Amino acid sequence: MLTMDDCLGLANLEAEEVAQIAAHEHLPFMTALEKGASLLHEPWGDAAVRQMVWDNLCSADRRRPAEAASLMTLYNDTCTRHPNPFDRRCSPARAAGSQRRH
Image 1 (tube, rainbow, N blue to C red):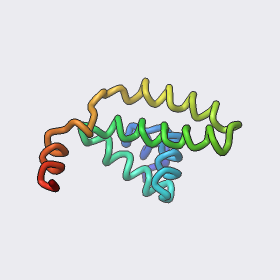
Image 2 (image 1 turned 90 degrees about the horizontal axis):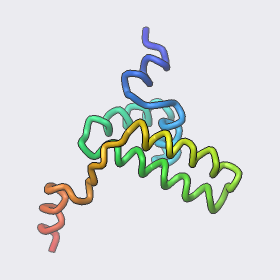
Image 3 (image 1 turned 90 degrees about the vertical axis):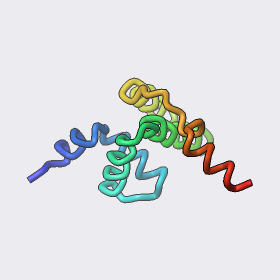
């Protein structure tokens, strides 16, 4: 039987990162864990995880300033753990998709 720590290790995510994915996407923890693991298999997945934590940080900074400091620490840790600089907004597939809409 897999433990929660096993699942987090297999996903290459920390529990706090999964909690932020869950909050950002309005998902239960285990679903967010699955989504995070799936994202990290994409070339742009690291950037997506970092962006979710950043979005939550920006929201907390406005609404819950006491939480912002811990989210800033988590964001810095997430950037260290998931440094891939790939920007999905610049991917060829995205550019091709945006050209078809015009």
